[in-house]
Image 1 (cartoon, rainbow, N blue to C red):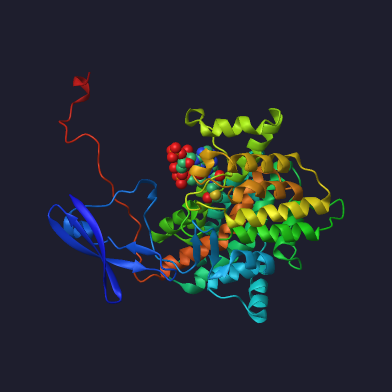
Image 2: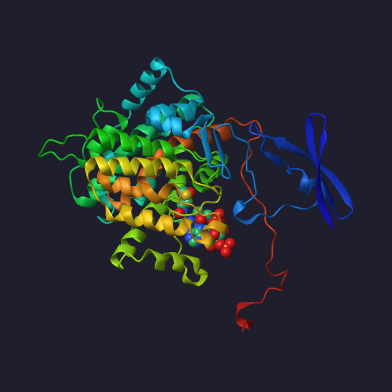
Length: 439
Ligand code: CMC
């Protein structure tokens, strides 16, 4: 028999755990928003037991100062600031500064940060030849993760995770170059020449120009597209210990360099249960339209466990309420489509799907709501971003969050290599059988 009780001793709380007649006391850690966790790091040493939590559903891997989210109340804040305020009043570079350095920059700080980024937007000419090796139809997420990993071969002077100056160089290079790397992968896929970055342009303007301008004609950057893109990058910029961020922290915990760690995070993000859901969601909406637009049929399919079908862009490990990012994106979507006078059947089907699902007892009971990936694809489409690039855009947004977490992990006094344990369930010790005697 085992049990856990919590007890308050003055200012400190502890949890008492009874295991096989032995009682041990574990410290309780309380966060600044009154979240509580039991520190079980001494459990095995004192009792021989470990904890098991497949998928880390209930496991806190760290304490963190970067992002607060409350999934029951639908709250998301970066460094204490509400996502709604940041999305309404900041640009992405400003929010990147906030995530990386913990404070909103003043004019001077922001100017210097923008200037530092602008110095690093170009790719080494030899890197451009990497792109010749990829097949024309390569997925841009594969290119992104390969080229980011390849950056470590060009910047061998800044790979030491313990040297703050080298880390700073690498973080600037990454944030500055990701749009260039991303847009080159798109240009490669459509057989157009790469467009060099133009440092007089803002971060989002520059990206749109590298994506859509061609040498033969003038390209006018649409201010509405710039502000929609800015908002999307901001709402994707961090989300505490999600799959890709935990990957970045885990890879970084072995003291792998920042480029290698971010490349791993990009690979983790690619999966359809994570950042790849935006691409999967648009594919799903197109499938529904092609199949006659019968939304109810797909809601029924998603409820049937045996169908293997899920509503993409729906549900979340942490949010059991409206995802505040989805609310911001849906409002922006409405506004942008109205302004551009676009009637996108995808947006209409998405809204219908949301209505049907949110009134269905299956989704109500399981607390499944649209997530960040449900409406983002509709905006990307309006801007002209091809479906395969959606998750690349997510990666561009998430980059400052990944870097902030990587740095926080390295700065932690308790930093150790991440190395979970397991409970072994395979065969017990067996006698070896020489090959000639095996049946
Ligand atoms: N459609 C239908 N049923 C669902 C869905 C869905 N989208 N999501 C969860 N469920 C059901 C699931 O079948 C399970 O039912 P039961 O309890 O009967 O087994 C229950 O809800 C809990 O789901 P879970 O898979 O155990 O929950 P999780 O926390 O492990 O997974 C999730 C979270 C986001 C992977 C999942 O909701 C999902 O697969 N959603 C679709 C993919 C998606 O939109 N991903 C983007 C997430 S947000 C952005 C990001 O992280 O990058």
